[in-house]
Image 1 (cartoon, helix red, strand yellow):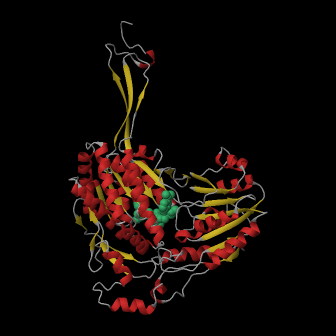
Image 2 (cartoon, rainbow, N blue to C red):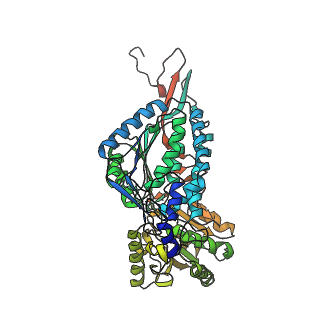
Image 3 (cartoon, helix red, strand yellow):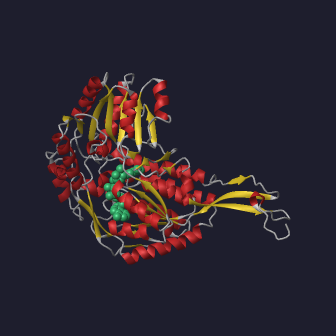
Length: 537
Ligand code: NAD
């Protein structure tokens, strides 16, 4: 943790940009200049003439850099260049595209720790999670290298003699990726890797509060593209806020919008893209539950719930927000969980010993406080936390720290906003049940359907949980927490989480244009279903 004195010394050590040494070290390692405005648009060249975005460190409140976002003209031009880049790239053989991805993977791996530190500095998650996020990009790049030789179509048996039917995947066009603040590297990675393997041009609009992560990643990716004489707009970047996002979503030049963010914005994005018959992939909010059965191994379950609820300061889409405890284990579980909560102290996310970093913005602190206040007013018992942390020493006093909170509302009512809304902060609501069916009903009774987790050793419970009457979420875990997925399976949620799937599994199939091609290699031209359309018949 930084002391006030250490910070003052660092600040006076002649850092020309006036940045703390803590921040300067991280930015320097990635060649990001904090002392002048940074261009936030890349479409083969770097520029930026739009509004200025300030990147603010959530841990200290320090302004890290100022970024010039995309003006409307620049966005228009970037979309044009992305279209041109697509026209070139779609004809590059897929395994060759895979080779470019392999080089991107290598370039990312060489900067893994530096990029991970930047994620920590700009987003606020602890360093190991920042590095883990970059690792996720590396992993999906590996996956997509293999995929580039396996994006197979099918041959379908035809009912007509001398005919064959092929289902053929071709590149789709320009894919826009609109990403959320909380995964400022990995979400783009999941999308870029599949989109690039599929032969598309990808245009990224990151969150307006994490422009530096997107610039650092784009520098790494573009250096590989340039080395291979591939147009840079194959991986274009346009930083900006809501206006830039809206223009992308409305643009007919964008064939698919992959949107990751809140339910509220996702609803608008989904409608807009649908209204122009574009393709849309939605990855929206989660309101994830863990269920603890009487036979659960508490030595495993308690730390997993702790990580799910407190990790990333509760700012993962898969964070554990609801905890349903079987009556027979409720007291023991809560007492162990409270001990872990009592021991955790907020601190500098870049420091190796810190488990709890800040919330991303000041506004998020307000959202946390309002949620705690609402719980208190409704009569919920607050077992841990429930307060904003204003007493951190030195520069951390300017950060957005809150105490992770455990609340036991007066009962479980999934119609109540306490249970059915996603609060993007470390607030865990606890309910007590008697029968698994009751807990599954509560798990499924909310609008969201992202992640869910059951803790049991009884195979009968497992069968119920993953079967037709079980969890309706996109991620259904057993003896694994709600948070922290691998890239191999398709990732995403059902219901108001948007039904999107990214990353592994069959997710790649959304990034291509499918055609059914019937080929007649006979000397007749029969119609399907035996239809006759001849006057001599
Ligand atoms: P957000 O919805 O505020 O912003 C997401 C993106 O949309 C940003 O790039 C933002 O600039 C842009 N945007 C804002 N208004 C827009 C508009 N009208 N039109 C087009 N674009 C617009 O979300 P956030 O606060 O950055 O992220 C947190 C949310 O994201 C949480 O709800 C979280 O659960 C969700 N999330 C979901 C997943 C998932 O995979 N399901 C992953 C990460 C985050």
